Image 1: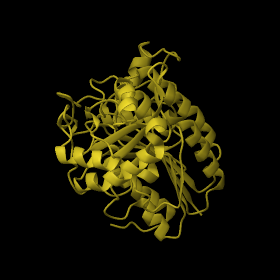
Image 2: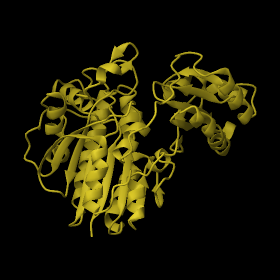
Image 3: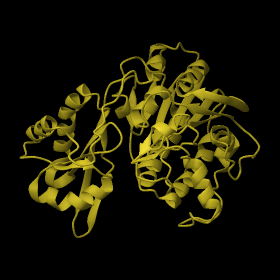
Image 4: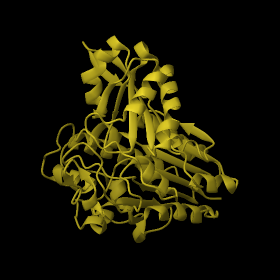
Length: 397
């Protein structure tokens, strides 16, 4: 029987979204943003030589059709685009009105977001007074810190010492529909932070805020603060069946690798495996060896986005892509006859762009195990239907 491995390279967009002009980083529209295209361009021009050198070297993804997908989506040709094909490729366009994690993942799993997300648009004093009061009440504190838009690493550096001294949780947001709560694992307590996020999540979800994210960190003012791998996302449960449900309903087993379980509130997943991206690659390799016939493994590699896209670190992003490509070659070599491996993305995060937020882009769809050729321009939700067709299961709406 067949197996499917759906791997989301978080934020690895390829430009060309037809509605990019309606999405913004600050006052600048996302028109022209192109995560892979601009990284490849920077590499070719010697602007990404920190820890690596030369052209962006991702031969396995190029052989699967990455360069062709970039050209189809945006018209840009990148080095290696004409490498001989070993896979099937396409460029996917999202219809959900969001350039965020839940919107992209839900639609890739067959369910476009059926509502408008709530955003905290004000850059300072971002949260309404009643939400702040509820947060403080649940935390057992006199108030909160932050209450603004901020990058996660910057705000813990700025407020970490004050947080430890005061005991107040650090609450912040971004251009995404999200409430993020950062707290020190030792002085505040990891269990306490997770409990606070779990209890405020229903309040945020009622407002149609997509996620509450626990952002634990450690360290001190002298040595610096660092976020830990114990992040947890408390997302709205999808309002209808998604790909993982379809697989379970057909009797298949489902595996969530990375933050997938959190994104879908465990809807339709039998088992979750988490950790930093290096550990996730180990989990993916293990599941390629051990996952049952008829199973779905759904993975998200987040560090392209969290460590490099938001920080506008072009060289770091390029290094991460090249590391992934080396590991991808090992995974492909272990696939069985009847397996497919699908690589895609949930949105863009062009590290050459202005601001620090996601960018509205098309996503590559690269498939090994289903022959060679072009899928052309498809929708995000078509990814779920391609996998359902491969596994021979029914699509549910």
